[in-house]
Image 1 (cartoon, rainbow, N blue to C red):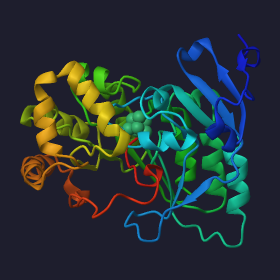
Image 2 (spheres, protein in one colour):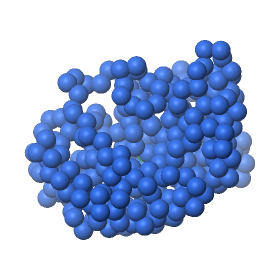
Image 3 (cartoon, rainbow, N blue to C red):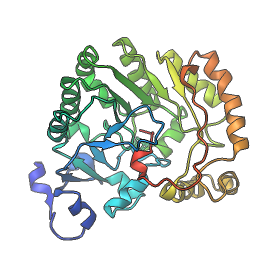
Image 4 (tube, rainbow, N blue to C red):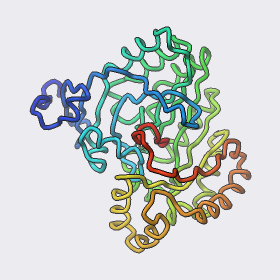
Length: 338
Ligand code: SF4
């Protein structure tokens, strides 16, 4: 069935936030049951990270907003509220696609003021979520960055990246390219419940292997660690052992944060699936977004020997302190999960 025949009425005034974002049309298709794609024409592709940030990149690109990977703990969820969509089910199913992102990016990269600072993809929503299979935005982005001599990094849970591996291999001969894969959960049942739209942990380990075989030094984001559910020694041992065996050179892990709307969405899941843990989560997080310092210290004590045993501890960062006040910039500029 052609997408054209399934176009929803884009001008019904029901989505004012999206209209401001440059909505062209909204599309549903049987291939993506339960998902609506909102195709927009973006005005800019590069997002500047605040200069106060300590992140190792100055710019990001987010080809889509919302993410059908649907991780319950995703802390980019709040960014959907800027579109007047909700941070729960809408984030998983109302996907905004910047169909012109590669062309706009190429134009921005031609500016004299562009100094080829590192650009990160996958900092807000996953650029290799399922929709990328239909929209094919990433090849144009990769080519534009490479042609302009801009170093870039990609963080993803999407095994769809394998489609672009030949292109990424070519790009890495011209500019620094860093690829990280996110694998936080080894337990298949828990993965299915908490990250229902993502490829299996096994498939992601195979992606790590394919990247390593292609010559990339792969970092794995073994985060977030979900307190009481994935912080057991046996789970972390299996997770990090599998990551090392797949050929990753390093891994980072830290406890789950529950910022903004993500907190309610995650705790609703806890109430449904692990009601006995609800009180413990409320004690651990209090009214805030971060675990207690005692838990952080305890988890580091558990992680460090495992990371060392598997030779994955090259990049272990200090656990970030809770900010003194809520972040002033949107979550889209802070999130580091894909
Ligand atoms: S954590 Fe990453 S992969 Fe999961 S929903 Fe959020 S952006 Fe998508």
